[in-house]
Amino acid sequence: MSVRVFVPRDTTALSLGADIVAERLRREADSRGLELTVVRNGSRGLAWLEPLVEVETPAGRVAFGPVTPGDVPALLDAGLLEGRDTHALALGPTEAIPYLAHQQRLTFARIGVIEALSIDDYRAHGGFRGLEAALALEPQEIVESVKASGLRGRGGAAFPTGIKWQTVLDTPADKKYVVCNADEGDSGTFADRLVMECDPYMLIEGMIITGLAVGASQGYIYLRSEYPLAKKILDDAITRAEAAGYLGSDLLGSGRTFQLEVRLGAGAYICGEETSLLESLEGKRGLVRFKPPLPAIEGLFGRPTVVNNVLSLAAVPFIIAEGAEAYANHGMGRSRGTLALQLAGNVKRGGLVELAFGTTLRTLMEDFGGGTASGRPLRAVQVGGPLCAYLPEGQWDLPLDYETFAEIGAGIGHGGVVMFDDSVDMAEQARFSMEFCKVESCGKCTPCRIGSTRGVEVIDRIRAGENRDANLELLGELCETMEDGSLCAMGGMTPFPVQSALTHFLADFQRPVDGD
Image (cartoon, rainbow, N blue to C red; front, side, top):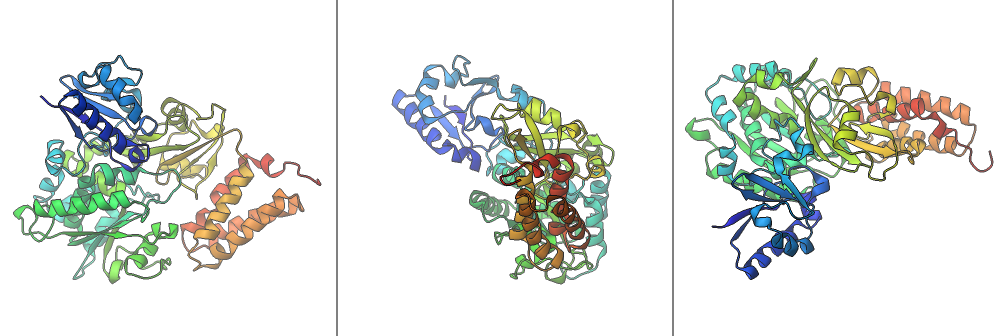
């Protein structure tokens, strides 16, 4: 009887040699006369263990990792196919690995478990139950379920998803659209990619349900151009879903229509802003639009449009299949459900951690991340991407909750957590924030376009010791102007990391330099 061995094929695993490991397993098994079937599953999101090889046993799947091609012969000698734990890379039952066992996976329950492009595998693990339930509901009933779940935008703005859907549903039009913002560009983020590469039908199902809820018959996935594997997998998944009747002009024989396409992004960070994304999707330069009108009223091609992040849409199938209460029972305050946190930067155990809102950064960075990769003490952490604040140790015990973080001038954003040890120069990090805005600004508004350029210059003068006190005051005033006067979050939030660095790490701006 052939033993099934799972080798991930997501971008992270592939970059670490997963294809070579899979091929070596096949060749070595053939040479030994062993019956082995290599299944290319998605990643579990435990990046520091990739490639993570799993073996199916009567007692469940057993994990080994990180596996290199050179490890394969010794692993087979040590009883890999029987799931024995005699090799140094043996990790025991996959589900019992503490990093995974201590999570609360709702959205990411299937990643790494299923073969990404297998509809049968997806259905066997609860897939399309939400869509089947939605087809029996009225649009307003679907919207009410999403409202009751407490789901908020996971792309960063945290706007209540159900309210956005209600606006699109209530706006009459001859055509409506659902647009998935998959232009994942924040530093330290990869959760969207994991959804698309490891469980693509979940995103497809979420978009179809959204279309049923608001009366939209066409969807677009605006995909980051740097994700070629996700593009290939999504295109294949859409083709298979159409053939199986889950997409097209007659959804599961219901007479309802939903078409879906993937469009590659323009390679610009600003196109992650929803109105700039819509401009790009229409074939124009990615410039931010003035609001109002909101995209929910006049969006893509001037029609009512739902624009949601990958993680927002991916949460929808669970909500409709299991009920709004099952989702809302997780979390705290107005932050309901779970949050996909992505550990990156100077971290020992980087990867995806899905937990209910309310855990602390310290728990995340120490219990899951294991501290820094360098072994040096942690000094700062940036949560939410390059436009969010740097947090000192005194703020690591606050619960991860939208309102709590807003009170301290911080943000959760897309859930990226980038860690820094005590060797970091926070003045340099502040400069990077301004320079990032300078490079990525669409240039439409003066505070962002000019402010970021002047910000870099002022920080350089401070670091060079030129009239330091006056330039520190000038930098503070410049940040206020950008925050209050910018057209969108690009310029409006760039001051946040700069201001936090000035508040909590001022000494880094005042270090003596040659000539002081």
